[in-house]
Image 1 (cartoon, one colour):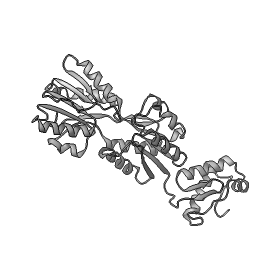
Image 2: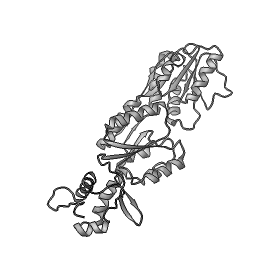
Image 3: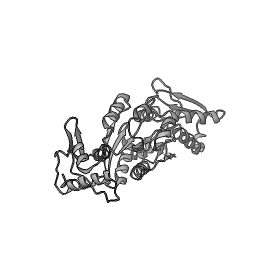
Image 4: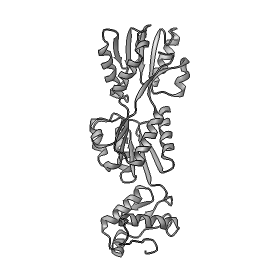
Length: 336
C-alpha cells in the first residue's frame, strides 16, 4: 500500500488532499491502472491512522472527477486514467437548438480544456429532469442546470451539494436564495426591447404576443402586459395561444417566441401579399444566423448566447457565487 499512498503528518497539505494526490500520482505512474481495485477504506484508515471521513472525502472527490468508481459491497476501482481534469461538469439543458448550441460551444471553449463536460437534456419533462438529477448526484464536481419552468424545482435540486450547483438561463425567487446563476430577465428584457423599438412600433395599430404557454418563460408575457398597459392609449394589444384560426390583418405586429409560429407568419404574409416591416410586423426570439437572411431579415429579441457561455465557464472555474443577468436586446431588421 505504501507504493500507492504516501501520507505525511509533517506536511502542511491536508491529509485528504495528500491521499488524492497520492492516488493520482500512482495512476499517472502506471502503478495502478484502469479497473484495478483500490485499498479498502478500513485498510487505509488503519495503515495511516486516518478517520473514515477523511478517506471518504478524498474518495468522493476522485469519484466526482470520474477517476474512480464504487461497486456496492465490493469497493472502489480505478474508472479512468485521465487525471488532469480538476472539473467534471454535469450540464443539463432543456433542449438543443441553434442558439443553445452557440451557448454550449462557447462554454466548452471558455473552459480551455480544464474540464470534462457531460451534457444531458430533459426536454421539458419533469420526470426526466428528476431522474437525471438523482442519477448524477455525487458523480460531478459541478452541476449546471437549466430548470425551465418546473414547479418547485428546488425540492429536486436540494439533494445536490449546494456549493456545486449553478443555474442557467431561467431562475426564480427560490433558486436565487440558494444558487448562483447566469440567467435572462425575460420580463425586464421584453419591456426594454419594445421601448427601444418605439419608433418602429408607431407604424402599427395592434400588438400581439403569440404565447402557447408551454416551455416559454412566463416573464415574456408579464413584460408584454406591462408594456402594453403603460401604452394602452397608443396601441391595442392581445395575447393569443396560437395562430390557428386567427385572422392576420394589415397594421399588426406579432411577437413570436416560437420559431414554429415564425415560419407560419412568414408563410401567411407571403400568401396574403403582406410586406413584412411595412404591412405586418414580426419580432422573433433568440437570434440565429438564419434569421439574418430569412425574409430579408427577421427582427429578434435576443441575448448574447456566446457571452452567456463564457460567463458561465468563468463562474464554474472560479466558483463565483453571483447572480448575473445576461441582457437581451432588440436586433432590428426588415421584418419590423
